[in-house]
Image 1: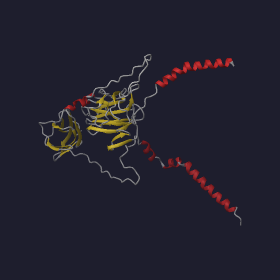
Image 2: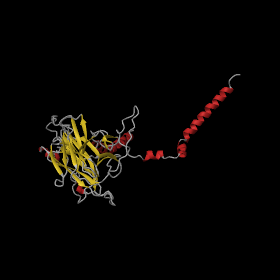
Image 3: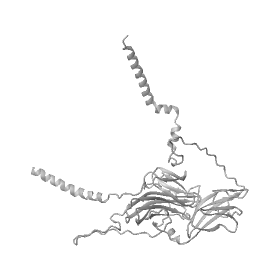
Image 4: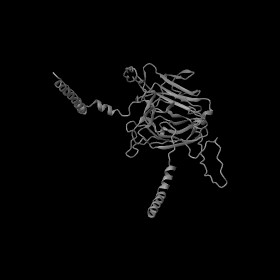
Length: 429
């Protein structure tokens, strides 16, 4: 008995010595909850304004300039975690956009950290797509001037240009995943997080990928309005981490100006590739219609003012081209542009004498049946090959796939008929 007790004590001591530190380490490494909905930006995605402009569940999209597409992306290496990343792109044009999400139920004074991963790609060669033989199998053209950052609005507003937003440092993560991080203190029970992207020049191919977004409370940091606990003279308290607040990003600092510049250029697109190549001159005599929330102005392009620049109040404007007779647009006819205080926004249109744009096939709308969802609310499936494969299965293979059900149905039919025959035979005369 005594030997049994000694062995038990030895075993317990060994368990404590070996398992105790591991248990303490596991407690210390308990993950901090992510306060965001769908921080990994997984499916489903929903259309926002256009079938090719979609947002992951729980998120919204703010567009400041251009007309970008936004879709789930599933191919490596542009997926950091999960099965997809969020891909925003606009080929042959610069764009500015921000994904955002409001988070409620925050205690004012809580110190929060926002982290995310971003990947940028820009290329001016549509033939090779800037491909290289080694990882990551593409080398971007940095002349695009891509800039990304993440931000927290501690007041819960929905304006990414608000001076209240605290921003991370700007990064240009061409062909690699870059971690972005910012810390801020909540000033209300709602905060808003932003995934912000912009670029200086629009190349033939432009895109930004986002993934693995997290908003967490800083461990050990207490809300600023909560009094610190008192300690006895003999107790020694571990120092709490002091968060470093990132200064405002360049765009909010420029909000001191009252107006911004909107510059539009129309050029003679000799090769009709919708890109202004070197030596392509301005095209005069084309009407420009600039429409805002409270104004609409018409201008005529000329050769001296290239581009034609206007000083406008901050806001979002639609710039449309009305070509002269015999002139066809080689690219888009209209673009949405956001004018920021103290900044210059540019848009370029290509046109050529005698050019006839290719016709777009008509789309026949099919009304939705009662009880079905509205068409266009969900993004197209990530991979339609499985659906196509099912549609192309030969008849004999389909019969083989359902052979089990066919045999079962025949067995039921034969068994039921046999039972009826037996009942009829046993029936008294």
